[in-house]
Image 1 (tube, rainbow, N blue to C red):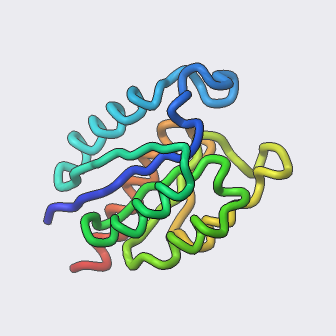
Image 2 (cartoon, one colour):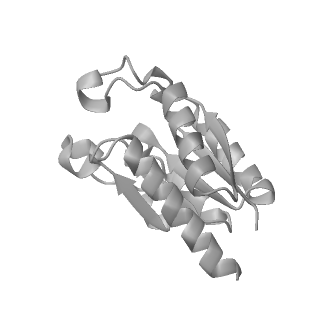
Length: 151
């Protein structure tokens, strides 16, 4: 069984590696994608990963809506959008494919305004606080969820 998984990264994640390295580390978005692709190739050979990053909320909404026709699931780091975007929450809830939310940092231990994710309730799971490992755990969880629900 082949699976197509989209990894969506939201605003400012294109600045990984230089943006607040004390919080987000020095790994760039490109390095994160290569690490995740290598992990998938080694541990999840049935998975084809695709990556998308934008700073624009509307583009993410359009992409999530289109993804339901082409992908089996989404690993999604909404970044700051998690705290305030009902539109993105509604987009995730509207598509019939599973979405797992991921964050590099533990948002529950961050500033008060970052601690609640509106998007989480529309997702099947949330992984955070472990840097790139959060993405790996999210991907593993998503793949297992898809396998259980399609066999």
